[in-house]
Length: 522
Image (cartoon, rainbow, N blue to C red; front, side, top):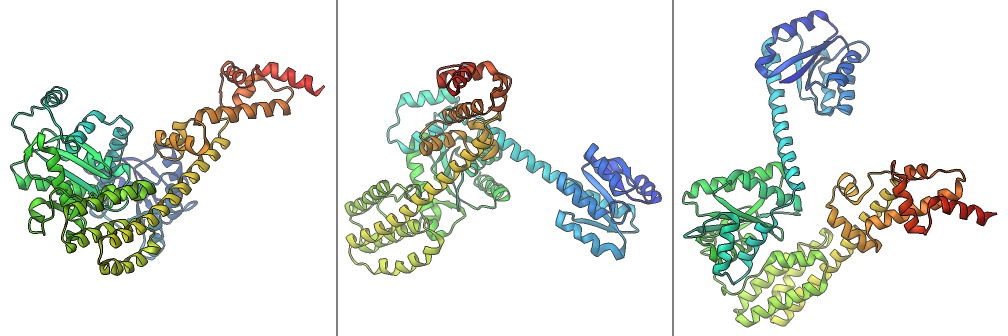
């Protein structure tokens, strides 16, 4: 039941609305009434209602002031504003605080009930969204099923697959692989992909598909990979895929391209994965977003089966800023095309696709220049010149990402150092606290980045700064006590542990150090 607070400076209106509305019919209860804005805000602070029905014109604090003050402290509370005809323009100013519901006085039960139903529906939607986000974050905090993920990665990336492997999988996951026909689904979010996107996509797919249809899931690069049972009802499968895409878009406003393989035995997972990569490679021709199957590309010009341009791998290498790895990847790709002896027009088609994938990773201000250079690439008539052209663009964009990543990392660690300095006396100061509460980052990643930039582990660096601060305080405060130092430097009510750390750092206890310091000064 949602709690409602009714506010009006006219007792007749308060009593009338209180009696004429069947609150329980709309899953609400009248938690209380107030005669003005000041009294209403006190009730809001004490009882935190879900909905406030308020007159706009009241003594002391009017309805608009009440909305503004409540929005600052409790933005989730929904308002239904009651106003006279001449006050409506004034009341509409509350829109800046998210107020959507207004009723002109005099009103009646039907109008109030209708507005109340709309607000309850909106609160229900918010609760469902918050519940989804909460569930997702709870799952994110738990360890992912690394073993299952690794198994699926092995299936699709390794050529070998033996009887012993089959037996282990059956025992480990309780999946009977005998006569099991499967398909692979690959989800590729468009635009800038974050780890949260892949995590959410996986969980949405698990919720919608469920067992026994969904067997295993994992992520490879910036894609989500699902191993599913053969679903004979194609319409039902396509419906679930569409619902996954729509749900993901609802929460992240990002479209997704999906590739669906044909059927095969689980031992053929590698072949099925190659089919999905072929489908994803045709995003350039078919457009981003939507579902692509092998049937959709069946009429496309055929290429040699042994050559697959893994656009995702090349893009990730460029964005990583690792020039040597990008150069080697391009060498391998061009060598593969040379060995297959493609016709010149087919080589040019692959090279253009490769070039487009690379330049999309560059800065937006240079994209126009790169696109103008596309005409030069099309005009080149020798394979070595095309390779040199594409490699030059790739090296330039890779260098751009190297500098961007380096500046980004330095900025992050600068924030961390500022947080450490400002929180030396905070007992909560830790790598996990800084990562989760202050920067909303993965703690392991932040720890590695910190050590790389600073040259020391986070905990060691904090201890060093605290001990240096302790030495400084001892020099400045002759009568400072050990327990006071412990409290000031984040050791809480554990002066004994502080003394142990201090002795390990300086070779003597704080008391001994104070005596030595006093003796040296004399």
